[in-house]
Length: 123
Image (cartoon, rainbow, N blue to C red):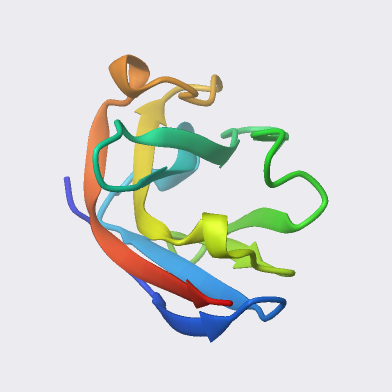
């Protein structure tokens, strides 16, 4: 399984970025997908996720109303649209997958990780 995240970069506070994650999964539609982020000295923290099946979404409180997750099963892609970025959103962002309908909200429940993409937010 390969998950390839992209789209990170440098953005000013208040700006937007869209992260993408390409999944090499023949049965992508059966996997719930999510995003985590890590800042130096801390463990990866859940950002948001989207379930397989009914595509329900869930978000960390810190990003609700600013971030939106979507998926395109035809393209095996999941996206994280990040708006109104704050300096505290700066982190390495990882896409993650979990087989089934439940979104992985904890590191221990993730089945596969993608490599990270760095988001830097300048104040």
